[in-house]
Length: 316
Image (cartoon, rainbow, N blue to C red; front, side, top):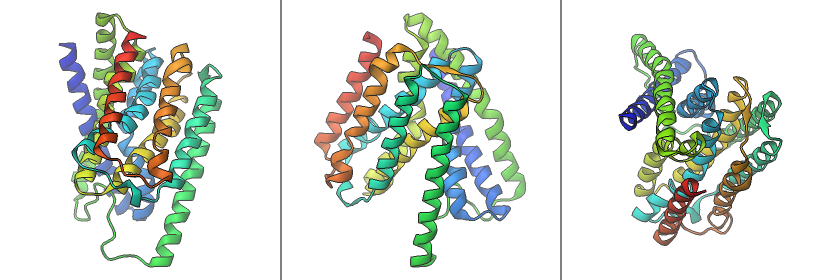
């Protein structure tokens, strides 16, 4: 039954997160907030809402290891599985992508995160540092986007933010917001309670469950998005989705969660998991800097590495 409750909690989380994004995006556009700013902030934060609620609930319930495990495990899964699995279906032509700047920012966030982790706990001060870096990255992205728009003009077919619907009535916007605000804490509560029971049944730590079951579950939206992008030959969307998601996980999720309570860093993170996350991030170097495509061979290799890591989490 606990697996059923965990699955139900995950489904509620994902649906509620999508509802919150749709409601918040259309509310912001109705209030006159520019679509560009909506894309860079509301959509980005909204799609990370499930991870954020899981982290907050985990801290409130006294299992902060699950919160940290969710973030670290999600980042590892995003690179090894979310890029690896779609590449097995279709070659991802990342050789034509220009993602160096975003990748460097992601690596900077990763290194700072690891340095702060070695203090032994993510506290209020650590959260401020992470959120300050995020604010600088968002301001830089906004400046770049505005400069690009001034240079090229606004295209008629400029893509609307995810979930935008100019004709959405007010009652529907309110319904989406209510579903999101009610569903997210409910789904997070179900998932975390079930994860604790599953961890006890299998004799493993909540941290291990966070690194595997919870992390994999919250990475499903990125996996679906990346798979569709790969099949549509949109490698830039796939790679950008993973890099952006990893930055938000490290900077926003843990940054905000520290305002709820301190997050102790277990020794296993310092000895293994953080370095696996860093190593997985470095595997992107050939695709970002040397214009290599993520071929099917690479896809198989990355996916196998993820399987080995998950098995290793339970063995260690």
